Structure formats: structure tokens, C-alpha cells
Image 1 (cartoon, helix red, strand yellow):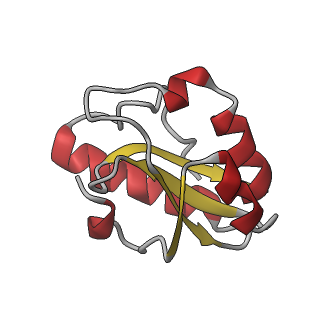
Image 2 (image 1 turned 90 degrees about the horizontal axis):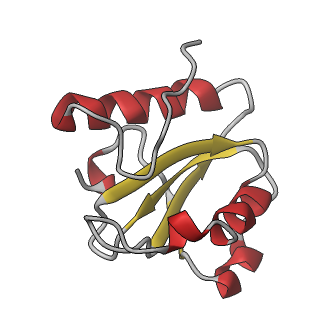
Image 3 (image 1 turned 60 degrees about the horizontal axis):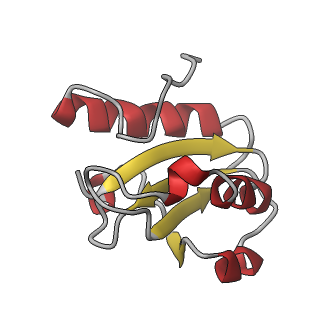
Length: 113
């Protein structure tokens, strides 16, 4: 599934490199890691996009190649902290409806709220 198919759309993206971290806000939001072609590898939420990006860059599993390739883009949308659970769950459900499972780098389902 390509990130362009998600609703609501993540409106911004940066490369998944350490140099890109300075382009991220400290705001809450939802994000998607994709390969170069935009295929979804991971869907997540956070109260601080800046910090979460750095955590993922420090996690070897998020930086190594997967069956769909290596994470290349970090797509995101800022949102009120009260809305991020619903957005993330919606994105996971959209992905699961097509593939029958979570993205390759997601290990657990988002809580239902």
C-alpha cells in the first residue's frame, strides 16, 4: 500500500536521515515510514514528532532493509494529542484491510479508543 492512499493524508515528509530531524516540529502527530517508492513500512503516533524521529533513527531495526526495502521517507501530519490515536488506528485499519496484517515494521496494534 502506498502512503498516498491513506486518509487523512500525511501532509509533509522528510527523508529518514539524521540531517532531516531539524525539519520536524516538537508537536504531536501521526507518521508513516515508507521506502523510496512510498510503500508503507510502519505507522505510528507520538506526542513529539522530533523526539520520535530520533528514537527511530537510533533503532537498528527501523534503519535496516525489510522485505519491501529500507525506510527512506518519514511522512507526517501534526494533530491534537486527543486525535492521534484515531488517526493512527485508521491508518493501520486501512493498511490491514488491504494486506491482512500490519506493516512490516509494526509489532503491535494501536489501542482502540
